[in-house]
Structures are given as C-alpha cells and as structure tokens.
Image (cartoon, rainbow, N blue to C red; front, side, top):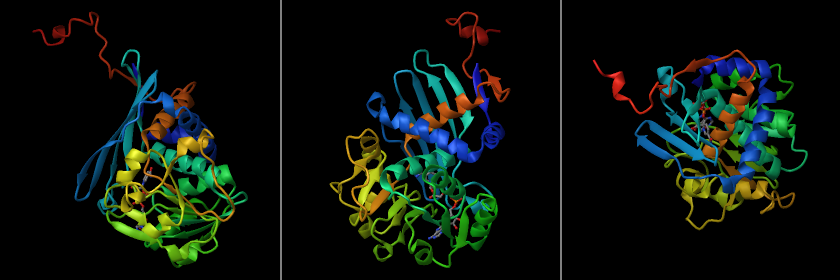
Length: 337
Ligand SMILES: NC(=O)c1ccc[n+]([C@@H]2O[C@H](COP(=O)([O-])OP(=O)(O)OC[C@H]3O[C@@H](n4cnc5c(N)ncnc54)[C@H](O)[C@@H]3O)[C@@H](O)[C@H]2O)c1
C-alpha cells in the first residue's frame, strides 16, 4: 500500500513540528542529498509551456529511491482564486517500482525552495548577515524569510511588493516571528543596505527587478522567480557583476536568469561548493547570486523528509496505488465476466 499525505496532512505535520524546525531539518536532507550528487541519475525537467504558464515533471533517482514531482507555474492564477504554484509528488522503491508515498507538495515546494536557498546562503553570504530584502510577498515569501532566519540568523527584513495587500499579509503572518519587518516603498528602498536580497516575484515576462545600480559590495542575491524561459528578475549586468551559483547547469541555462547570457558565462553548481570541490564565498566584497530554478533533488529530499516526519503519526491514508493481485501474472482476471 502507498501512503497518501494530502495538503491537510502535510499542513498538520509541519504545523505540529514547527515551520522553522521543518526548514532546518529539511535543509539537512537537502544538503545531504546534494553532497551525494554523483549517486543520482539527473536530468533537466520536462516542461510543457502555454501562453499562461508551465506544467513540469521533475524526476530523479538514486540506487534505492525514485521520485517525481508534477508542478505548475501560472502567474495569472491568483486572479482566478488559484495558487501560482501547486504540486504533488511520488516517492517509489527502485528495486520493485512500488510507490511508497504520494504527497501533496504545494507546501513542500515552498519549504524546499526556501531551505535550498538557505543552504546556498550558508555558503555564499557574508558572516553575520542580518538584514534581508524580500521582493515579492506571495506564497513563497514567508518561507524564504523564515529559512534565512532559522539557518542564518537574519533579524531584519525589508519587504516590497507591487501589491500592498501582499505586504500586509506577510507582515501579519510574521508578526510573532521576532523579526523586525519594514514595509518599503520601492525595490530600491528595500534593497539599500541589505546583506541578502531575495526576489520571488511572479510575472511571465522578462523583468529586471534588480538592476546593477542597486548592488552593494558583499551582497548576496537569491533569485527565485526567474525560473522559466522568458521569465527573469535580474538585469543581465547584475549577473555579470557577480559569481553565479546554480543548482544544475544544464537546466538553469535554459530556465534561470542566466538564460539572458551566453552559454559560456561561468557558473558553479551548488553541489560542488557543498562537497568542497569549489569554494563558497571568496572575500567580503564579492557579490554572489544563487540563480534558483528548483531542481528535482530538492523534491526527492522533501519527500524523504515528510515520509520520515509522518512515521509514528497516525496520519494520511493507505491507498492501493499499486494493484495487489492474488496472481500477479493474471491481470485479465480483473475484467473477466
Ligand atoms: N526557484 C524555485 O525553486 C521556485 C519554487 C517555487 C516558486 N518559484 C517562483 O517564485 C515566484 C513566486 O512564487 P509565489 O508562489 O510566491 O507566487 P505568488 O503569485 O504567490 O506571489 C508573487 C508576488 O510577486 C509580486 N510581484 C510581481 N511582480 C513584482 C515586481 N516587479 N516587484 C515586486 N513584486 C512583484 C506579486 O504582486 C505577488 O504578490 C514565481 O515566479 C514562481 O514561479 C520558484
């Protein structure tokens, strides 16, 4: 039987565990899996584009587990009362093909994106980074902020969104977080003096939310929303001024902010930094960019994490996703009159 965790079950598990604790624990799963990079069979995700958005399938496997995530990205969905990004995923046993877990991954996607950003941030930000700017205050934003609080100790966040209601929502959601949250009047105001700048805007177009004149020595930019062909957030000169780190070069060249630059623009894959093959931050003044698009390994980690978290809880539902037959070679029996 396969364990099914729907959004209600995932929400209960995360709420009872605590969001910051979940981000910290999940970051360890993600870092462990990135460090095992050569053990994985990796491939860029398959994407089906339409004028309004994208549907993606993200598979990956190591020698014992296989996972995939079905995820969308539809920036205009909010106007229809739908999420911009929602997802579900499956974790299966490689030896038999048995699906072990079917889980809603809408919350898990926000958690794993934030935890991955903080794992990259640990390697790339200046020590004692305390001030973060958050541009785009939609579904991902609180998770991004709490991950940088839990893993890096940020204390102050300047937020900006073109929709004032989104800023109000974020400020209310994080009112008890212990963070100082300041609503800024513009991107420029939010970014000025920030150690870490996270962009998580949603628009199906080439935006330049961060421009080179906003850069300051030592700044770390965590670009989340430039994650599809024709969808960017960072001006190309921001990338040219920085050391750029990516999840998986082959996928990010096509989907990330670096899609704006020639194919030989130098980038470093995150796993190489996490395994010590390449250095993390190199000096106080270095400007760094994590050009995040989301990679399947993070979903693999998230599914492992939630499966472990569910153990010992009476939660979820056992479903027969893989048919159990008395004679596994007699499938016809199911339709015989
Ligand atoms: N890298 C990853 O792994 C990953 C994972 C999940 C989501 N994403 C991307 O992150 C982005 C945010 O996702 P979400 O679920 O929070 O979307 P959302 O629609 O819930 O929120 C997006 C917010 O961005 C704001 N915005 C749009 N343009 C802006 C601008 N120029 N300046 C300031 N604010 C602006 C909108 O008003 C909205 O509040 C999306 O582009 C999504 O595709 C990336």
